[in-house]
Length: 96
Image 1: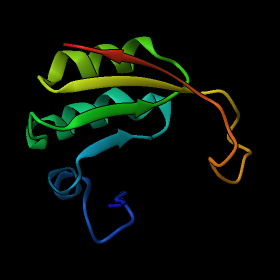
Image 2 (image 1 turned 180 degrees about the horizontal axis):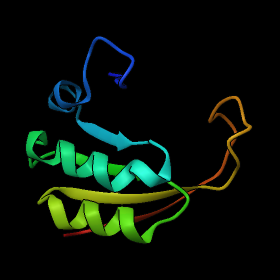
Image 3 (image 1 turned 45 degrees about the vertical axis):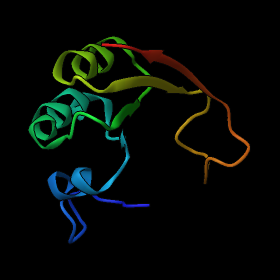
Image 4 (image 1 turned 90 degrees about the horizontal axis):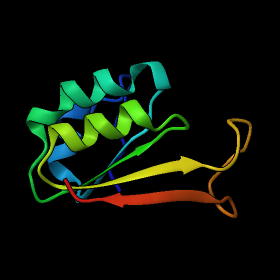
């Protein structure tokens, strides 16, 4: 697993080159901007996912900026949970 954020030594643009599955999980208001910033670094053969509650903008951005596979996910829980184990996540696989 590769983890990157604005606070890690490994920057997101470098991390996406290393991962087979890329999950964009940032505050909703920054999701599209982050996708736009990273898209030029994404290899076409990667699975790209967003992990946001509001789907339309993020999903359109993912599908519009990549030729790879896109999976839109929606957490079925709030930000107060401590981990993903035991939580439900809805998803929809898209083929751009």
